Length: 290
Image (cartoon, rainbow, N blue to C red; front, side, top):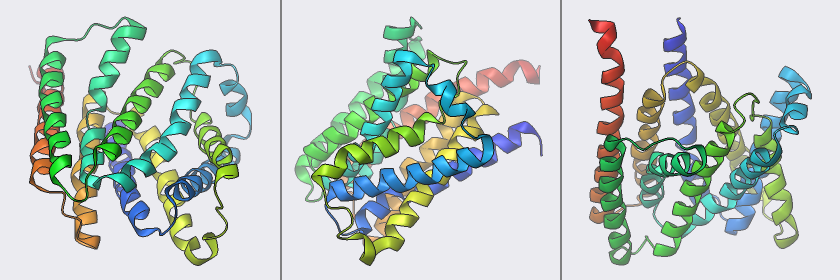
C-alpha cells in the first residue's frame, strides 16, 4: 500500500470512528457535564497510555517547549469537550455536525489574522454560501422541537475553538502537538470534577462511557496520522462524511428527525465546501495529467 492509499484509509477510519460520538452523548443518561467529564477523561487516558507505550515521555517534553501557541492549543481543545456535549444535548445532532462542517471558513479567517495568509476568491465565495447555510440552520432551530439556538451557539463555539487550535498548531510546526491532546482532555475533565459527581452514574453505564472514550481515542489517532499522507483538500472532503453519517446514524438508532430546514441548510453548507475542496483537488491533479 502506497502512502496516498494509506492516508485515505487512515483518515476514513478516523472519520468512521468519530461518527458515533453524538450517538454516545444521546444514549448516556447523565448530566451533560458528567458526560463531558468521562468523554475527556477516558479518551485522554487511552491516548496518554498509547503515547507512553509508543514514544515514552519524549513527546510531552517537546510540547512543554511550544510556549504560548501550545497553551492556547491545549486550552481550546480542552474546552471543546464540554462544548461538544452541551451542543449535542441542547440542539439536534444534525445542527451540530452541519455547523462543524463550516470549520474551514473560520480556519481561513484565523490564518489571515494570525498568519497573514490571504483568503482566495474561491474561499470568499465559499464563506458567503456557508453563511447562508448556517443562517438557514439557525432559522430552522426556531421551528424545530429538538433544535435550539443555545445548542447552535455551543456548536459554533466548538467550531471556532477547533479552528483557533489548528491555527495555533501551525505556529509551532516543528513540534508534534499530539501529546498535548491527552493533557487537554484530562485537564478539562479535572477542571469539571469539583462541579459534578461523575462516579454516581459510572457503574451502571461504564460500558457506554468506556466505549465513548475508546471511539474518540481511536478517531483522534487515525485523524492525526492520516492527513500526513494526503492533501488538505482530500482531508476536508473525507471529514465531510461525518456531517452526513452522524445525523443519519442518530436518525436510524433513536429516530431523531433533524427537520427540513436543518437538512436544507446542511446541504448548502456541505455542498459549498464539497465543491470548493473538489476544485482545489482537481487543480492540483491537472499538471500530473498533462
